Length: 187
Image 1 (cartoon, rainbow, N blue to C red):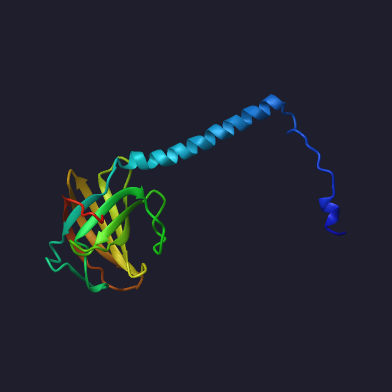
Image 2 (spheres, rainbow, N blue to C red):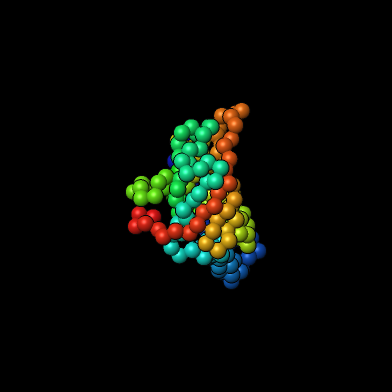
């Protein structure tokens, strides 16, 4: 048997068993409304989760690491970011694939005044929560920083913990306090 047998067969059109043409139209209309609702609900998910219109910048202090902001093990002599920028758009899934649906884009700026930034992402713990988690992957996602903070007006306060994919490495921790700051042009 060759392929032409399947392609040359007559194609007959028929309605669903037991359905009237009017029922088919109603089902199509219902499917269209449901799909439109899915699109609207995804867009409104971002709107309901946070009412941001413009990026919010925070100047971060690390009392346990001091003004040098040197993170230590497992990250070494790298400095923790001085500025965190929280944005309202969805996070881009790049090197760090753990950025889940529902995360928002963020940037980490190592030193105030730097023109470059590093990708990060953030999310609320729940739609009505003032608790945020901010993830800053470093070095192609082999290690990074995880911030767990509470938002109180123009202040973020909580803890930051380093993470790595290497087992048995001690995590560096610090308390953090971040105050709302004016965003630079690049933010």
